[in-house]
Length: 139
Image (cartoon, rainbow, N blue to C red; front, side, top):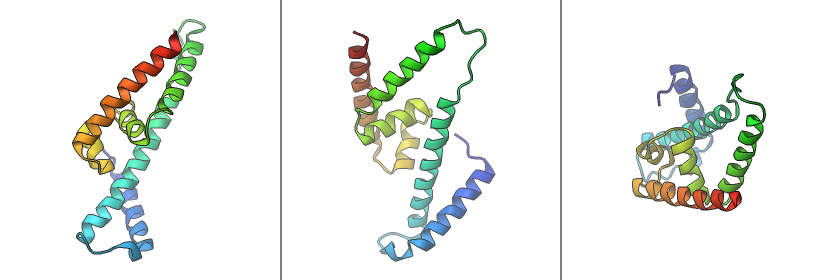
């Protein structure tokens, strides 16, 4: 999951601007650099999640795809979106980043600030719920 230099520079600049705007919220409980890095991580997470959603929505249609297959894929995507809406925010975020964006549990923990065990639990519980919900919709 590499970040291009320009993207990293944009996030760094946005993080510094956000830190300046919210300087009044810095309590000094952690080093200033850690506080700014946390802001940068949140900005990165938002950008990465947005780009991952855009990539998932912008998948090109294969000209070799049989007629009607696009409609089935579209319906499956709507079913999955509906099922995802039943997950908790944490489960939805972790499952989407793990299986939608291809991030590892460790990467998700680093970006979200959640403990690794919590990320693993969210992914496992979320997938189990999705399986049940998707199976129920097929019946």
